[in-house]
Image 1 (cartoon, helix red, strand yellow):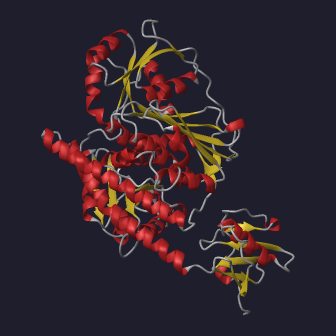
Image 2: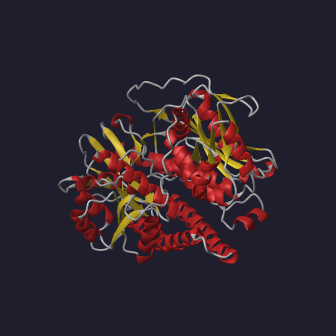
Image 3: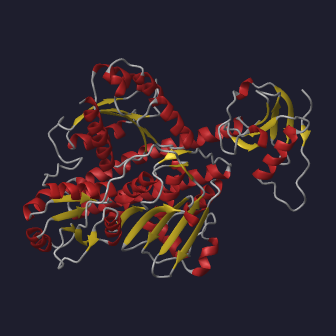
Amino acid sequence: MSDPAHIRPTPAGEPATSETIAAEVLSAAARGWPGAALVIGPRGRVISASPLSGLTEGMRAPFDLPAAPVASQIVDNAGRRWRVSAPVAGVRLATADLKEEPDAAHRFTAAVSHEIRTPLNGILGMAALLEEEGDLSAAQRDYASAIRKSGSRLLDLLNNVLDFSRMEAGDIPIDAAPFDPSDLVQDAAELLAPRAHAASLDIAAIVDPDLPMRMIGDAGRLRQILFNLAGNAIKFTTSGAVLIEARRGRGGKGLALIVRDTGAGVPEHARARLFDAFSQVSAADARRDGGVGLGLAIVARLVAAMKGSVDVSSIWGQGAMFRVDLPLEPATVPASPQPQPQGSLKVAMDLPPASGLACIAALANEGAQLVSAEDFPDLVILDAALPPAKIEAMAKRRRTLVVMRPGDRSRIEQFREMGCAGYLIRPLRAASIIERVGLTFSGAVQAEPQGAAKKPGEAGSVLIADDNAVNALLARSALTAAGFRVDTASTGAEALERIGETLYSVVFMDIRMPVMDGLEATRRIRRLAGPAADVPIVALTADVNPELEDLAREAGVSQLAAKPIDPQRLRELAARWASWRKQAAE
């Protein structure tokens, strides 16, 4: 092998950016070679490509890299070594000779993430279970709430520090695949709802009906952007609401994600540094937040990696609006008949601002007309927080739906006795609103909500595979209270054995376990004979990243969920997949 060739140094005063390095390496690899050339990063992704290759930045390299014989080496102007291969399928590859350091750093980050998030899952989950107890004194409830809030802040700090450290190392892989933008924003609202409701804030999501049903992009990274923006909005909003919106981008192209809040807003002088790392609007915000100012810096880096833009508009004292524009293309989907509006339904409502807007958006698309309660509406939709006398008086005169938080489910029977025709759970989904309105006018009786108290085993059977005894106890307690029969396993091998003996409604599988990890156990379950192979498997992990999502999907995981997971979310996941399993068996 020849001695490493050095690339010419970067001109004085010009920083050696990763794009500059990639371009120089590509030029050196292609020198004297008439075919295509690629520069492959340490994670096996294309970071630069010649036009002849037909590949673009961010794609996975379609070659078995270790099999490519090394012809020479290059040392770039940052001192990094690159291996230049002999041609593989007519393509010359320049691969980063950085495997030890990035892989070790990646393993360290994943291990730290798992080891900290796992006990945090126990702390937050047990605090949430304590708060659900009905016989706590006011002081005891305050103590449990303080534990949960402190743990949540620690989790936020951990997430941001780990994410930022990965990005500082240049680890921002983008996996483009078809996704549903409606599900993206609705899921973000639902996952952040417990935090918003705990702060007495309303939260909802709106989707432009003209938006393509599916688009091409990295749903995991987009979700991360929304969590940071909406999480920030919740943090700095003391009263009112947070609204998440998805619409077409400027000029009717691409995707725009918008987060609005009714907080204090951002002063003009602070906007220039808002997306800088370790920056806060003011010292007072830093003291109140307790964070380190990384959330918006992470958003800016992710948006830049997807070649988009992010900006903020605000009126001091009246809230802020963050907008992300991304050049995403629509995915090709089979044409399907669109439901026609069901006539001009007159609807009156008294709801918090974000939920009201979500409700109006969903029903307006169905041809409904918003009227006042005095204009003889066909339907009235009321907030469960209104005085009971007002709700009861309206329910006796008009068909009435009541909108409640998940924690208000115990009041369902009370609302039925008042005469309410049904209920909706915040945050509101457009599909749920339309379905519930239709059922109300058909005279159907609304079923008990997912997660409502049932007799043991009535809701289904669940296997919890987790080597952490506290997390297993948390899951068992939360799901047993929701009417599930729960078994536990402490290794993937034990989970595989139990699934071979018992037909479960759903399996919650921790990814990191001794003897056999969760992904290997999932692969073997999918190879079983009979209905056991089709059991829904929800994989639980403390380190969600695009590469792990790919591995989980390839292994046959039904859904990937991030730790820590609160008891209510656990019940909702169990109920959703148990219902799917039951319908699939019929």
